[in-house]
Length: 338
Image (cartoon, rainbow, N blue to C red; front, side):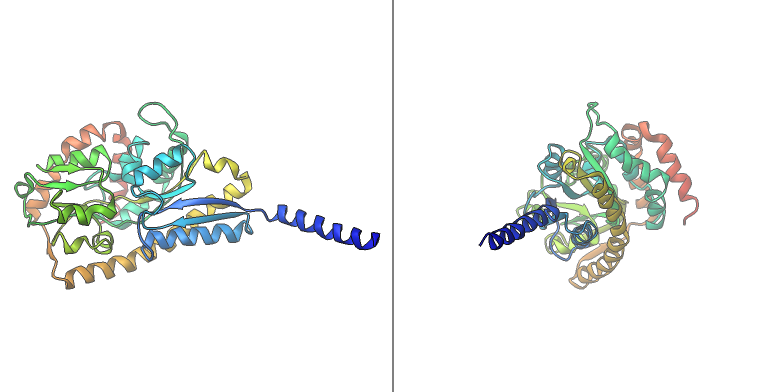
């Protein structure tokens, strides 16, 4: 009997020790886009690879479609206090917490996607990514965020309920923009009013209820959110190329041991190519869908495009003055691209 009891106790101890050995840390990731969207696919790939490469020690639960946080600014604020571990967000709202990020999203800055990626994956972009963690915000406080990698988001253009062929046509329009002062001022410089506080999942309803006259975003978001059914004019001005950023929470990630933290950082960078490929495919599909649905796509004339560009000069003074060196470096890289 004693032998049997000893054997049972041995099994219990082995089981208990095994449980400790494979105990997992569960972390949450917030994503405002729905299942199948390129960044959502990348989030899921990130979670899969982290689990695989940490041998199950780290499990990341991915919440899509804004089910955890409806606005990206809410997710950022949750990460700052450690209530959320990860979020995929646009670089635009990050600029409100880490001002130097504004340098890579100035209007009409890049000649092409290739130009942007040469910047982001080069010394300029990688230093700015590191600055998210080590830098301070405009109030002199640490951001509380960790920059993990950049994702593609294409170029952003205006989509509206009326035709626009010139700056004069923008007068009086109410346009939803991201929660970033520079984006608000960009729209104001064109004679319109920038409206913030509307999540990407609420743009369609805000247009149909005439709260706003439109928004600005890329082809996939315009199509995926159904906004093309409410705002049927897509003004292809490509005013900004604002990358996405996969962020981590400095507070929430303190519970992760250094070795696993390195795995997380490496895996994040590995998912970049995955997302870029998914983005290219989705972008082509989305453009095809909205054009087939009867959307009027307006290419600005060279003169009109130059007029839009000229209106941005005050933004470079207000938001770019502190980062003139970075902006000039980005333009220098652009000399290698058409």
